[in-house]
Image 1 (cartoon, rainbow, N blue to C red):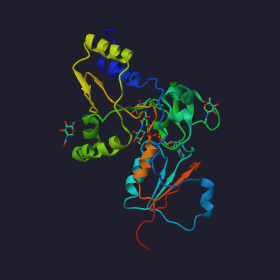
Image 2 (image 1 turned 30 degrees about the vertical axis):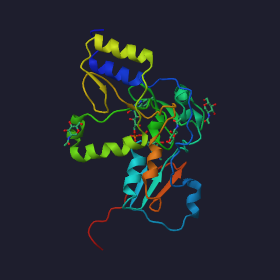
Image 3 (image 1 turned 120 degrees about the vertical axis):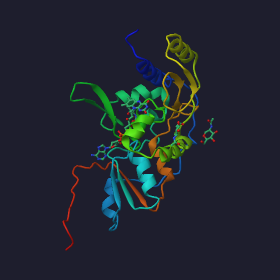
Image 4 (image 1 turned 45 degrees about the vertical axis):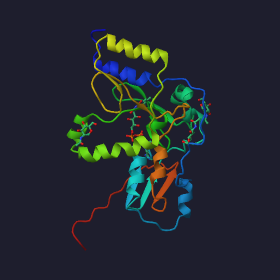
Length: 249
Ligand SMILES: Cc1cc2nc3c(=O)[nH]c(=O)nc-3n(C[C@H](O)[C@H](O)[C@H](O)COP(=O)(O)OP(=O)(O)OC[C@H]3O[C@@H](n4cnc5c(N)ncnc54)[C@H](O)[C@@H]3O)c2cc1C
Ligand SMILES: *[C@@H]1O[C@H](CO)[C@@H](O)[C@H](O)[C@H]1NC(C)=O
Ligand SMILES: *[C@@H]1O[C@H](CO)[C@@H](O)[C@H](O)[C@H]1NC(C)=O
Ligand SMILES: *[C@@H]1O[C@H](CO)[C@@H](O)[C@H](O)[C@H]1NC(C)=O
C-alpha cells in the first residue's frame, strides 16, 4: 500500500463516490434547450453564415457554444445523437450498461489507444459527461496558471456550471468507510465537502442529482441565445478546409 500515492487514492475515491445506487426518478429536470435538429435538415436551411463552427458537442463544445452564442452566430456539429430520453445515459445504475454498449447507436465508443490502453469515448451530444463517472471538481490552480488563464475570471466562471449541473452526493456507508480508511492510511488533511482541488481527502461534486439522474453538458445549451445557435446531431465532420488569404485583394 505504501507504493500507492495519495493522489492515486484520491482518484479512486473520486471514482467510487459516485457509483451509488439510487431508486428515485426526476424527469422534470430536462432543461429548456434550443432545437436539436438532425444534420439531414441542414439542406433545408437557407443561406446562413456563422461566426463560429464548433466541431463536437461534448463536455467543452456545449458550454463554448452557449457562451459564444451570447454575441455571435454559432453552428454546433455533433456526430452522435441526443442524450435525452435515453435511460442508459440518464440513470446512474445504467452507468456500466452505457459504457459497455457496443451497438451501432451507442453513446459510447470503445477504442484502444496507440499505447494499448483499452478506453471509451463519447459519441453523443453532451460528450464525456454522458458516459463518465460524473465526478466534478474545480481545476488544479497550477493547471489554470500554466494554461495562462485569468484565475479570477476562471473562479467567477465555476458557478455558471455548478448551478446548472453539479450536486453534492449523499455518502453511502461503504463510501464513508472508504473515506475513513483513506484518512487512517494518512491521506490527509480531510477537506470535507468541497469543489476545490485540494491535497488530501475530500468529498467532491457530482453531476448525478439526488435521484441518481445524470445532468450533462448538453443541459448547458439551455444558457444559449437560441436565435444565435444552431445545433445539428448526427453531423460527423470529415474534413475542415481553411481558406487563407494573404493581403487584401
Ligand atoms: C469512463 C470514463 C469516466 C470518466 N470519469 C470522469 C469523472 O468522473 N470526472 C471527470 O471530470 N472526468 C471524467 N472522465 C473524463 C471526461 O469525461 C473527459 O475528459 C471529458 O468529457 C472530455 O471533454 P471534451 O470536451 O474534450 O471531449 P468530449 O466530451 O468527448 O466531446 C467530444 C465530442 O466531439 C464529438 N466528435 C468527435 N469527433 C467528431 C467529428 N468528426 N464530427 C462531429 N463531432 C465529433 C464526440 O461525439 C463528442 O461528443 C471520464 C472519462 C471516461 C471515458
Ligand atoms: C426534480 O427536479 C426539479 C427541477 O430541477 C426540482 O424542482 C424537484 O425538486 C426535483 N424532485 C426531486 C424528487 O428530486
Ligand atoms: C441500452 O443498452 C442496451 C445494452 O447495450 C441496448 O441493447 C439498448 O438498445 C440501449 N438502449 C438505448 C435506448 O440506447
Ligand atoms: C480562486 O479560488 C481559489 C480557491 O477557492 C482561491 O484560493 C484563489 O485565491 C482564487 N483566485 C483569485 C484570483 O480570486
